[in-house]
Image (cartoon, rainbow, N blue to C red; front, top):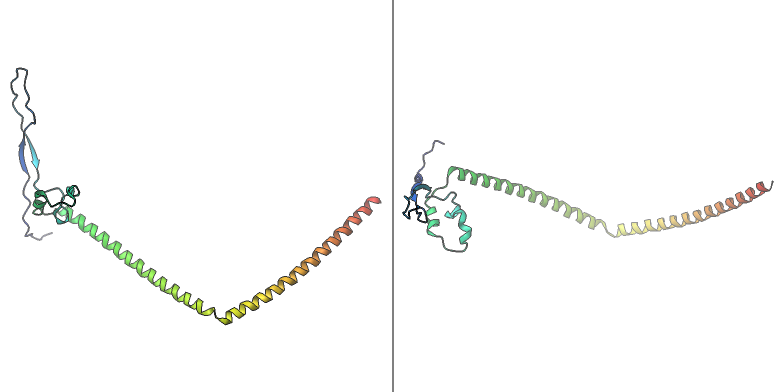
Length: 174
């Protein structure tokens, strides 16, 4: 990136010899020569979280920070970790922006519905009630008229059925 950093560079890993746990004996009961292997030990934990806690911090929940955690404060996060954190922060900001837009839209919709509700409440005055009563009276008279017409048509239908049956009986007799 072309910028110089005032941060100290992380120290290189330390190699420490590790010896076997138990003694090995040959057939004669003598001790075999020990094999020494080199193991690379990093002074910084792989990922230092915010506040200097390592990934294993959940095991010590509620306890005082250990010496290992205190040492990790000296260790600086890597560029990869910073980029990951920056990516997460960007995603959270985008979600926050989206939630803000949704809240704004829902607030506007709520205001519009409240105004519409107020208009509907105001229209339900005495004039509307009188108009509804008038319509109900007109509709009930129309229903009564249609019921009487239906009764008349049913009677005409029965008369025609009787006439058809008698005509059918006379035709059989011929």
